[in-house]
Length: 191
Image: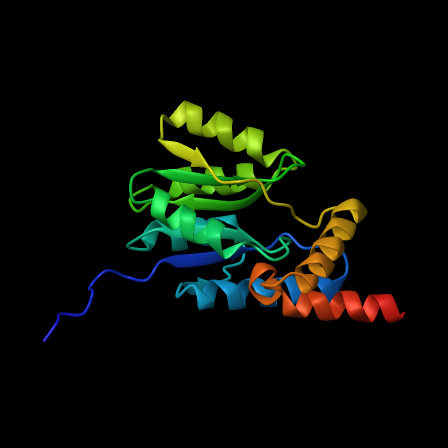
């Protein structure tokens, strides 16, 4: 009889950074939560930077911090981050606007450093702030492919176009995993 794997499931922490529309914010958060659970991660949404850092530091295993204003986070990015964390300390998912959409942390980072990384990632220019902090700390890090967040009307338009294109593609349902965001766009178009 095979022994069950004793390693803990990776932890995903949803970091609140929501657009102004409460219905869109809820759709984004729920889609993100569903995707991370689909990837067999334990998902939590602690409130506040200190609570996020404490949860991340106390977890035995890798931790992904996923930001709640990211539409249709690619599963490949989350899985790739977990793979990279087997050898590196930190993985950063950059956005074209200079912010961060995902922050991966290896096991063993201390709580104050995690808290500083979360605070840096939450800044408007979170990518530059994280890079500076990583350089100062001497941690080994890598970058994921860029993705977007819904911080502006332009990014909202991009997300809507991406959704429409994914529906036309052969693998549309697996390319853009954001059913609640799709429904939000459909309601918005009817208004």
